[in-house]
Length: 72
Image (cartoon, rainbow, N blue to C red; front, side, top):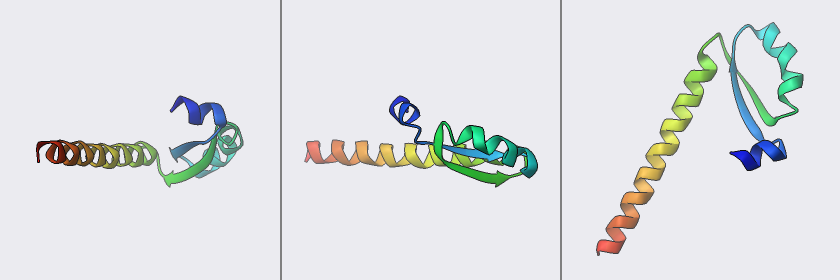
């Protein structure tokens, strides 16, 4: 989020030509502490979507558990 961006603690999942990734990595380290090369073009976006889906599923489970606990 915004706090991580201000602190320079973002994670970047990057896809593309490895030489271009290596050239951009120095710039990305100014904004993030985890810079991960995922492979060819599009793989960084795929990794981000998978990560977001996992987080959403976790949040849904948490909300359902809280709702169940309240009802019991």
